[in-house]
Image 1 (cartoon, rainbow, N blue to C red):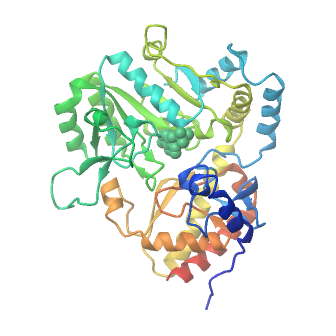
Image 2: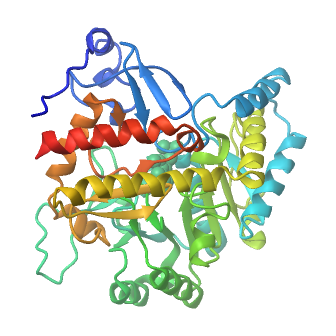
Length: 440
Ligand code: PMP
């Protein structure tokens, strides 16, 4: 009989009590709040592990929501960042390194013909949508249910599943993510369910002539790694061409992670615009908007406005140069995907031995674990499924020294360092086995 593990969180709990007086929910980002007694504060990270302020160590599969592609405190990238720091930080001028990074990106991702920099995923997608509107002269756009593209108003529309009846053929209502999103922009957003070819065609037939862009994450990094089929993405490409709509592939999570050429390389589809962020600089804040030359040249005086004080900051840029070099020239991505395969196989063995039906979604470098025979292929299927087993197991995993997102929405992320340290796999599988026993 396994008993629930005890983990001391005295310092995190005390920190929470102080922090909640000064920081809303006691945290810097709402998603970091896990409950008054379960919110933990990081002390430091190294490789594939994180330590909290109580000294508990965790094999970390959140990796800051994906950015630490090589692992925390990677000495190669950090040394480069220090060189970036020495040159002065931020100028109101361009630097040579911007071109070096842009050339590397174009080499790795052929559709990234021209590149612009920004600081976060939100900023990159916001700029991409503006660019598409400037280029096409249209305002509305298409989102895929379950996708997440950042915090700006236009991206914050979702399908309301609360009242939705799976047997009906009608689409769920479109609602904002929380309060503060103006209803006046709602009519610009259209939503379709992932992998439903018929609805995609119907939506283009009805709105294609007025849409500037279709935005899609072919692996939904914020919804259980739900994946688009190759046929679906290719149909999206074809319909975009037919109706003069720009295809924006949001690779904020998949870019420089699932492969050097991103998910677009795997699916064999060429978007007009791509957004990248997380893995570009192993966690230093930088994001990219990249795409077709004629489209990207709409970033100009009199065209789409774009800029920013911290854009192409010398620290992030130097880190990006080194991180992308490593991802391009070394087997880092194979190492981390190989680790993901071994982890999936180990987890599968544990679950199968107990007769627990399960499946995986996404890619070995970022996968979702799902307790059904097949993973959901769209948000409606995920939202109406039973994910309580996962949620309970996730809390036990935290207690046992493994960090995964406390709901099945966020995939498990791998980094190179996981694959270079055998103990990460051993520790994880031991904890998974115990967590499953406790959950049953
Ligand atoms: N696009 C995708 C696919 C994302 O996963 C995220 C963040 N999770 C964003 C955009 C927004 O990025 P940021 O949090 O850096 O603003």
